[in-house]
Amino acid sequence: MSSLESSGEPFDPRRNVLVVLHEPQNLVNIAGVVRGMANMGLERLTLVGPAEFDGHRITGIAHRTDHIVDRISIVDSLEEALADTVYVMGTSARARTAQRNYGHPRALAERILDRALDGPAAIVFGREDRGLSNEALDRCQDVAVVPTTEEYSSLNLAQAFLVIAYEILVASGRDQPPFPTGKRSVGPATGAELEEMYGALESGLDYIDFFKSRKSESVMRTLRTALSRSELDGHEARLLRSVGYEMRNVTRRLQDDLARARDRPPDRGDTGRS
Image 1 (cartoon, rainbow, N blue to C red):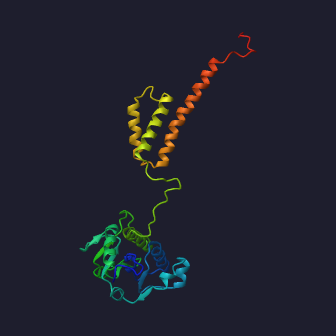
Image 2: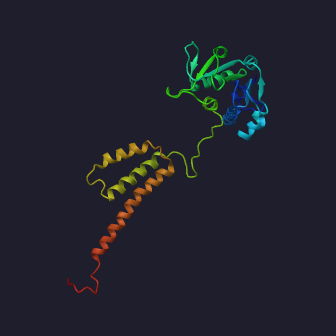
Image 3: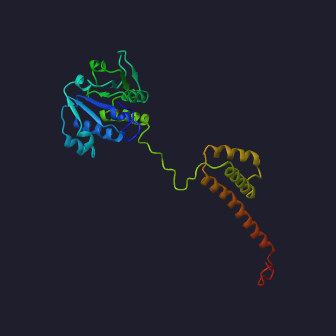
C-alpha cells in the first residue's frame, strides 16, 4: 500500500486500525465503542459473535456514526476476524501469570500505527464479563493493560477502548489543532520589549517607595525570574510596562497635588481662629 493518498497527503495509518470486539454482550457497550471510534478517528469495526446487534439502535445512541455502523463486519470466529491482519494487539484488565508482551497503551500506540502502515492492524477486546481467553491472547503479538488502581481495576468496555484509542490519536499527531492564542497574541516579547517593561516596573516601584526597605536589585531579579517562567508575549509585556508607568504617573500626580495644596493661599473665609 502506498504511503501517500491521491491528494498528496501522508497516509493516515488509523485507516488501517481494526477494532475487534469478541463476543460483546451489551449493545450499549458496542454503541459506546462506536462513539469513541468517531471521537478518535477510527472507522473499522468487526464484531465476533455479538449477543445482540441493531445498527439503528446503535446510531440512536451514538449519533452521526452511520459512516462506522454501515461498515461494521460481523463474523463467527476470532480466526475469521483476524485472517487478514498483519498485527494484533490484545487487551487485558491486568497482566496475567502467562508470559506475554505486556505494555501500556501509550507505549503500544506508536507500534500499532507503525504496523498499520503495512496493512490491517487489530485491537481486540474481550467480552464484558470475562475479557479475552488465553487462547485469544495467544493470537496477539502484544497485550495492552490500562493502568488503574489495584482496589478497582475493572473498566467498562467503552472506557477501556477510549483510553487506548485516545493514545492512538495522540501518537498519530492528527486531528489536534493548536489551542487558540487569542486575538491579541503577537508572538513572544522581544528582548527590547522585556527590558523596557522591567525598567518601567522598577521605576514605578521606586516611585511608590517599594524599595524603601528592600534592595531594588534583589527585587528586580526575583521579578525577572518569576516573569521569565511565564514566557510573556509582546502584548503582555506592554501591559506590564504600562502598569509600571501608571504607578509612576499616579504617584507624580499625587505629589504635585500635595505640593499645590501646600502652596495654596489660605481661604479668604478663614479667620485663622480655631
